[in-house]
Length: 177
Figure 1 (cartoon, helix red, strand yellow):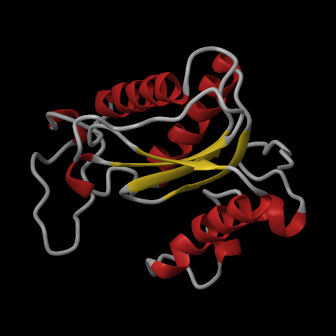
Figure 2: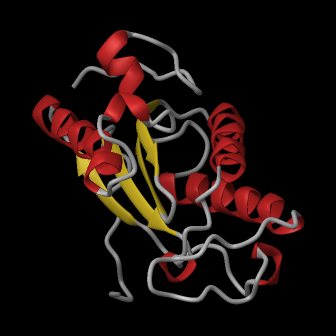
């Protein structure tokens, strides 16, 4: 990974961010872990004042489509979100779900040296077409990974909001580009 990542903040654009669990382990592989993540996402969103335009939680990574926050930067937001989720999940005696073809050590999440991979991928979304592209990509992710047959069946995403106007687990914000 490059040491000097370029982040483009202050342009009023949306940010499509992706970050992964440590060693791509399925640390968000349980309903409890994903629900806790959504709860903390809501808290961080309220505290930092950013718009949540889309999301999907996968067992081993997360995609968010967010605005720049009123307080701090997207980097600050992700740092706080990742810290809060990892601290809370590491306090539990939740077992590490087995990754395909790998033995996950140690046995419990609390015993891991890290919860998240360092850094995150950030793509500035500057047009309606790019926003649509990123939302479609996110919503198709659980289907492509074989978790469900249709995006409507994966509740840890913003698909229900865009397909049926339903709130889902967390309210989405309308942002027109």
